[in-house]
Image (cartoon, rainbow, N blue to C red; front, side, top):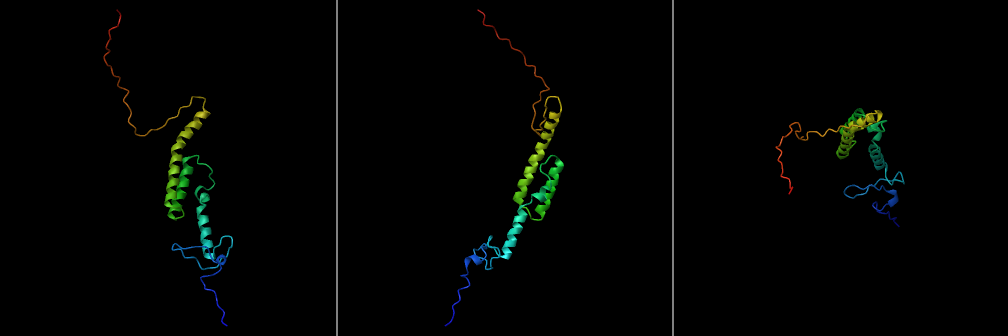
Length: 153
């Protein structure tokens, strides 16, 4: 009697890699890590993606807060390098750059607040409103005064 071998496509599901391609085909390689369910190739790809997603140490280094424009500039420089290396998606990079823009805009106000707290003088904060049109208040209009008759009867 001849032995019948199972079809190669019917391999034990737990022994095959769980990765699927875009077309829906499943990887044929054997699992090396039962916890992840992935073969050696896809397991290494997944660890590279996890490593790339943790970019905080590369971007900010030892910074915990952005206290001056130099800190923000350093962060943006690192972000540019990571964008050039394709380690950060353009969308994610744009969000981070916009957030840095907001931080830079508020830094000057924060510095003024800190200086006001250290002085005994009243707090005065100057906010630059850009090129908004201002009314000309230097020209005082002298409209003729019209007297109204009183209602004394």
